[in-house]
Image (cartoon, rainbow over all chains, first blue to last red; front, top):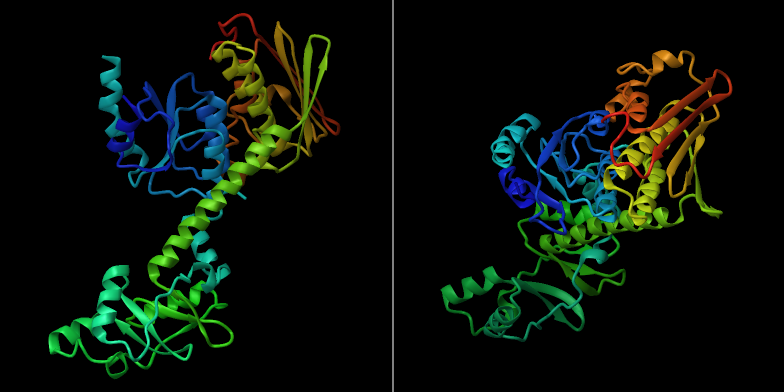
Length: 114
Length: 312
């Protein structure tokens, strides 16, 4: 799936513009625990989370996440937006809850695997 | 510090900090009582304004709105003088008032624009709700830009860097409780390894192990440092803290065991995955801890092999 497809599937608002909206997103990690994201064995993925803190962006930078999507209509601080800009990490927010977001992305991920 | 402010409360705070003069427009087109309503109509159409203040001898004496013009067209007095049809009781606002007052005014009165007066009572600008929104958007963006600049500066300045023979050594101080800066050392190490063309998977494991070590120092210790030594063969990351030390190292190494506080857990850390994850990412890992004096982690990754020894 492409990053722009993810954004439109999740009806997400773009807070930090991706350099390449057509970047291929093979997978996603959904977690409200940064430790889980850090321990994930996946390599190329986007992060879906309900956490709002600069540490979300730091974690995304460390694991090389392709983008961060904040769920449940969470709005980040300007600090967090600034951090994402500095590290070139695309940032989105969606009104959808975490589970519904995963449900919507599942067919796209399956299409990639097929 | 930890996401205490969301977009709304930041905007809320801003309307109290910013003054009316920060958001008002100063390119005000005015008319005199002697102009005709027809002339005002042409003016409003040309400039796409919805109303204009009326000045006599430099003082504000009224306002003509688009509604006044519509009424004039409707009732046939469009060729008559402004003086006879303008609204005379004008609600104004002072330029040094906080923007929150203007927001209140717009909620209380049915007007779409507020003439702004300076301390001498002279007209110095005009303010509409969309001017306020535009100003807030600019201000919010500025806050994000400031944060981005601070981060870029920090990344460039953070730590010390010396070349010792074939080895690059970097040191970073890590302060207890300083969550906002945990991640600087790992980001720097990641950048250096990437620059050297190290395999992306190794870079990633090194960054993750360092970040886990940094957050451990922030969460559990009284402060410490990250020491890095990179050569062609391997990257060595040492995380050294000044205490209090780990009572039962074996227990601390068990996945899921953690002594982190509720606050730390609410931030998404403290799941008891840190040390096991460091071990998983490293090719060689040692931990020494003495209660009362501190903990020393020695994390090593080979830079030549792409296959992680410890699995992922």
